[in-house]
Length: 97
Image: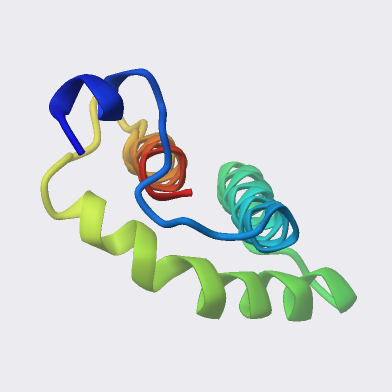
């Protein structure tokens, strides 16, 4: 596979359509979880049921986003690590699937 093939979006992994759809769907759900987690972080720590939801999201999303937080420090108090994490994840899926 040449670099030109990669640039036009031909998949590296020859998977059936259903497998590619499932992988893309799971990645989009994870990106949605990153977005929800980022929204929670803007409004502070919730209480009650939402606190449990936030803890669950934090345990799922934080390890991945933390990889990007090491290289992207906050700018004026705003962290772009969740955005970078989502973009990289989407790019990897586009490249592989």
